Amino acid sequence: MIATRRFAATAAVVLVTATAASVAASFDVVGGWAAVAVDDLAQLATGLLATGCCWWTARRATGPDRRWRLAAGFGAACWSTGQALWTWYQLVERRAVPSPSPADAGYLGIVPFAFVALLVIGNHRRSDSPDALLDRRTTSARLVLLLDGLIVVGSLFALVWTTSLGALVAAGNPSSAAFLVAIAYPVTDLVLLVIVVVLGADRKVVLRPQLRLLGLGLAALAASDLAFAYLVSVQAPEVPPLANAGFVLGPALIALAALAPAPTATAGPSRHRRSWQWAYLLMPYVPLLVTSVLVLRRTAIGDVGPLDAVEIGCGFTVFVAVILRQLVTIVDNTKLVLLLRESERTLRHQAHHDPLTGLANRALFERRLDEAMAAHHRDGTPFGLLFVDLDDFKAVNDVSGHAHGDAVLERVAHRLRECVRDTDVVARLGGDEFGVLVEGVEEPERVAFRVLDALGEEIGASVGVVICSGQDPEATAASVLVCADKAMYEAKRDGGRGLVIRS
Image (cartoon, rainbow, N blue to C red):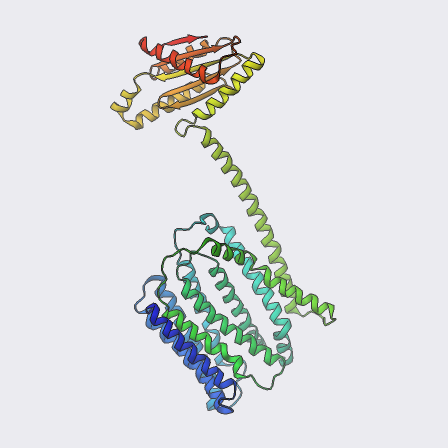
């Protein structure tokens, strides 16, 4: 890890040098055996540079930042070993490199270590996120990620197989070992690139600069792997050094990933975050669409031969993965809809009910009182309003504490509910004040006496009762509530533990 300004200068030097080596070998700046030597040695030099940078910076790093560097360093060391063997074959023994060869083991050795490095970077995530719901990693979310990766890898591998790799394998009539080596390069390249894309869409990953550079390095290696396979499949007389540019730039970018300065904790703009989310959502379908278009084109021009086992296997695997992904998505969406509906019900309940007692709050009580008054004026439906205030409740809080006072309020609420029907409304109007709305009852004072008897066992209460049975066009919900409040205070002035009834 180096400072930002020094890193910019170092990156410029490394990339210019790596590019110059590729250009020199590709555009006849040097030719013949010298071009091969420059190309091979440049690849080996950048591989060793990546190994050294990863291990050198790992000494001063800690935690995940150290672990991914160690893993990337071992991967670069394996790749460099493979390149050293390749260079030995070409420059010392001056003969064609056999396939498979020990060099392939070295080249492919970078894969497990790069996989570990990417997983370490992916698991080093910020805990705070504005998209907490989207960032949750449920079992179904992990399954979707797996299926997405399978769709992408299967689609791109089918594309590579039909365009170049299949012809290469068929022309060479390889042994089982050679066949496995031939398909190992594109498959492992695609798997690593899919992981990079998935992690790149996760805005909570901390080591984003390191992830980008490491991903670009792996992409450069994959591009040269693909170019090499294509040139061999079309029986090109030689592989031009330009096709190996990714083998020079890839390790150089991995070295820069190790040298990149630690990221600062800044949140990106919401528009940029949404674009990454859209890219992530569309990720599995883009390569599938490209492969489908290629198949349709081949069908349209008549360039369709019998499908081989690999094409059949890839097609069936991708088809099953797409179906499973859609089923998982449908199930997840159904669960999400149910969750949203339940959340809406919870929010509506919380908006109209007291959180301590579960009774209706003042807003809901006043709305129901307005409805009862409208029905009374329209149809003459009688109703009674009880305003209940606990006696000496302040002393309960002062002597026993607020926790005990809350427990008393909960028991009072329970007793009030037992005194009325399910269709009646019991509300906590605030503090130790309660309201009871009894509709369609000729004698609501009986309910008031039941309330006094029930609360007398717990704590005394003063009750003001207003009975609306006759027609009074001037009466309103607010005036009735004020009248019940005054009646309650009159009962309290008379010594409490009683009721006053107004008509």
